[in-house]
Amino acid sequence: MKIEDVRKTAYSMPLTSPSYPRGPYRFINREFMNIVYRTDPDALRAVVPEPLTFDEPLVKFEFIRMPDSTGFGDYTEAGQVIPVKFNGVAGGYSHAMFLNDEAPIAGGREIWGFPKKLANPTLKVEADTLVGKLDYGSIRIATATMGYKYTNLDLGKMQKAVEAPSFLLKIIPHVDGTPRICELVQYECSEVAVKGAWSGPAALQLFEHALAPVARLPVREVVSASHIVTDLTLGLGHVVYDYLAR
Image 1 (cartoon, rainbow, N blue to C red):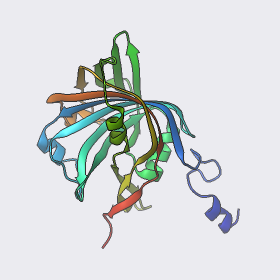
Image 2 (cartoon, rainbow, N blue to C red; image 1 turned 90 degrees about the vertical axis):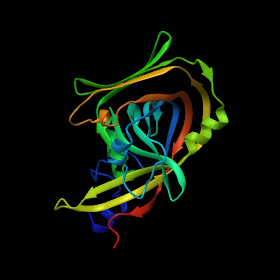
Image 3 (tube, helix red, strand yellow; image 1 turned 60 degrees about the vertical axis):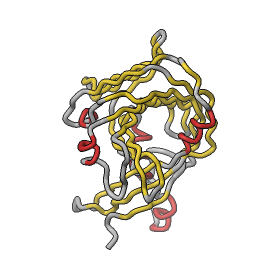
């Protein structure tokens, strides 16, 4: 393989058998259960990187079913997103993400900087309850429950929420272990079509784990909950802050 061939074909690893295809990445019938809760402000300050800021000590715990996604297939994800601001722009900072599919783990980390780790999340309806469970190995680290389709939500407001900016801390090390890339990335979702959105009573339990420390942002009070079904395209984003710039 010639040098020019490498330059033309290199976009993911491994070079000759990439873990995922080139984008754009379209998601059909993507299903969210979002539980917003109040946490300890000092714990939140310890994990939100400057120049991001936050007004209230809130965290959104997400369970997401993705049955039909371009190149990534069928998988489920769970994690914590923190409502933040960057230069006055409100959005969400992805603090921790856990999923059960190698392709979106590789693509999410390599392209955007999503903080993805391998785990086993599930989201399903059990009788009258929407149930989210997150296991890291054999250990349960989160359980969420929500009344199924109790109250309809405004679809226009939910579309704006899905389209809001999101922020990621992308870190790629050099061969000597020092950071070669350390950037704040902003991205948005486009071509959003919200098919349904509901609220209902909700509960969330988080459990201690050494390598999946979701409980370090403890649940003090559940503030709200939403259940959304939507189609969307995941945008590729852009760098808004370089931590290594002199």
